[in-house]
Length: 372
Ligand code: OSB
Ligand code: MG
Figure 1 (cartoon, rainbow, N blue to C red):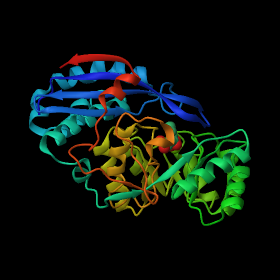
Figure 2 (cartoon, rainbow, N blue to C red; figure 1 turned 30 degrees about the vertical axis):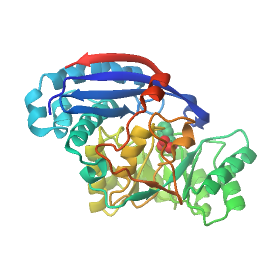
Figure 3 (cartoon, helix red, strand yellow; figure 1 turned 90 degrees about the vertical axis):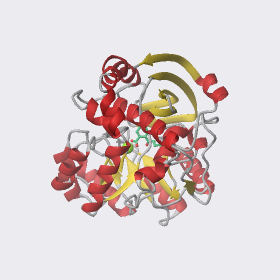
């Protein structure tokens, strides 16, 4: 594999409806896409960083900056490693540069996609997928009223989603969960995600969620409060799942050992790439923990890759792998749909989906070519 350069393409995609979480409300997604160009063809990467550093310290402008200033020059200086080892060389070549996992993940994704497309191999086969379709869960934002929430949840259940995740925050937790249970019953697989909105002082309040039989509570406390999560896990019956706190296989190992979580939400962008994501999957499986594939409001590119990852054997809970139309009226790829509550894992070369040039041009706000 020889990389000639990478095109950075910023796109702006309006959301079908505002998406409100404990850290803010989004009405559009500002995304950095990467196109890796090699003599054997191209590959696509999608950076999951958001416009503002509210979910994680990374943000889209910073990811473009670090790619331009440090990551691409570092990769350009190591052509032999890339030629010899291909995509797995990306993480090792970039390892002296601290942090910036979402930017690194996007670059590794683009290189791996180029490599797999050229070889005619699928993302699913490369990662070790064992299913040809994955159950589809949906992440539901915070609303002004419970009545609105119930309508939206009803729509997703009617569309076939097999699991509902409610975003929660102080003041929007017991009441919406109770309302969904009362309206749609105890049989609906239901979980909540706080995106770090609570502290350990809220433990007794959070224990009141126990009666609702939730699959899990995701990231109730702040990112670095691993010990707090371990203490909370001893005080509530709902299984604690970590998202923001898990940034690598190493942090996953520590969290597991400390008893901070019994379930992990794996997001490849957050942990530095799909290859590290597979390592976390393997680690969790070795410890008997369930994992599921999270989402970052990706386009069809990221969602296709997530569906393949979610088809590994240890992904035993439904992921945030919703259809294109959950967030976007028009996706940049062919729309990914769900049938009987499942998304089909793409089998074509690489990601198995490709941006549609006219759609891509329509949503593009800037393009920058960075030769290696
Ligand atoms: O915490 O899982 C999260 C979206 C953006 C940032 C963080 C999160 C989310 C979601 C959306 O919950 C999941 C999706 O992409 O469907
Ligand atoms: Mg989350």
